[in-house]
Image (tube, rainbow, N blue to C red):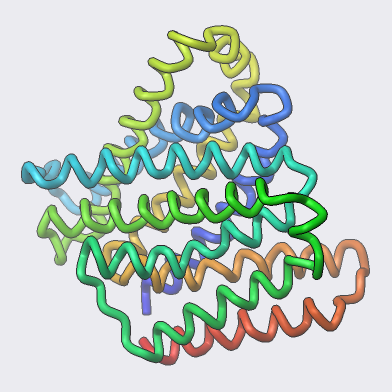
Length: 295
């Protein structure tokens, strides 16, 4: 059950990173805020890798040829997913869009079955569906889709699909290293490889198309440093989870992030939960409990 501990830590760290990235989007734009996650994150990922190598007295892995296509697929999917997510955060229908992003576990399960052969038991599949449905029930008010239009729905579902695809690709990369006894090293090496790739790709794009945004990123280095660290920290634990459990299980348990946000909102603002929210929360908790019990 170590994967569950990794996932809970990652979800908490991701909440902090997303909050910081939302603020940066206003000044840096969508692509600029996306780059912050990678550009200021990869130095920390490299430090994590050095620390793991020293602690385990191990050298760097020797990736097989099949490793790099997985890394590139994961890196590209995460760039696309992050860009769509941040663009959605600028939309007035943030809650609706977020709910559809959280359809990611279902899409992850499908990608995992097709690309990695990660088969789910009927119990695990039921847990994923219940928890995901709980998020949608809790977040989407009746008639919200009609009020906000089709755009938030499409952006949210596609963003969730991209995050799901990247999760499967990163798990595929870690598994291709063939290091089950050194899963921490394999996960950390893959994190460093992906963040360096992502930072390089977006750096080339910004130099070519938006050099002003790149200069703005450098001026905002203090908040960007925090966002980069939290991003790398969260990703470190996501990758550790992917290395020892199916990506669908990890991303389903990650839905507790919604409960974190809901709890803070209720305690901070003393707001009472509606019946719809109570039902949604109960479904998420039920799905998560069923998920853990099925493992």
